[in-house]
Amino acid sequence: MGHVIECIAIGRGHEIVCHIDAGEEDKFATSEFRSSDVAIEFTQPTAAVENYRRAWKEGVRVVSGTTGWTAQMEDVRREMASVGGSLFWTSNFSLGVNIVMEINRRLASIMKKYEGYTVGMTEVHHTEKKDAPSGTAIVLADQIEANYGTRPEIESIREGMVPGIHEIRYDSAVDIITLRHEAKSRDGLALGAVLAAEFMKDRKPGFYGMEDLMR
Image 1 (cartoon, rainbow, N blue to C red):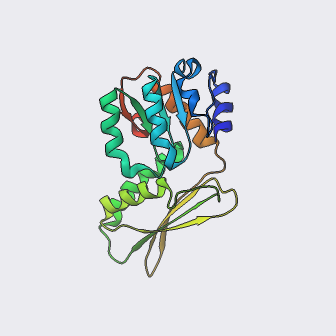
Image 2 (image 1 turned 135 degrees about the horizontal axis):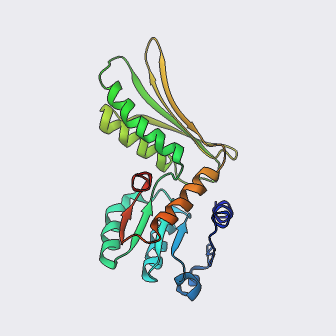
């Protein structure tokens, strides 16, 4: 993911001033890192929150797409506010996925009016993805629960190098209504992350997400 983000960022005229991989956490305290406008963070659930703290300590805004840590969200937001940090976080940077999220909310509200349907969800990702279900699937399920009244069961599948598939089904005795997004590559995620970094460059401290960017 980092390589794809770097290629897109350079292609849009940006300069990459620092790379930090696992085991290189001392680089957070370097002048190169401090010179950056925004740090883009895609790591693991166990590392993400500490990475945010390290970046805020150096006065650097963070854009993150790491999922699996959001049980700590309220604590992270309070800590961010206390230190004057900035975080742009989303479960999925794909503009297409975020369009599907808008449709998902509306569809769930419509389906609430009709009996005879059961709702389910399947998400498929590459075998290197650590969290299951995906953060995007959890957000979609939250939306359905809030607008439809029932939380769907999520089937998580890990196979090959699949960038990401999310499918929601409303199944009845007479038909099936399906809402599906399938990523062709990681390019859409990477572009969204770079757009978020551009959006964050001159923002005042605070918490931001894709709804802010898409507005």
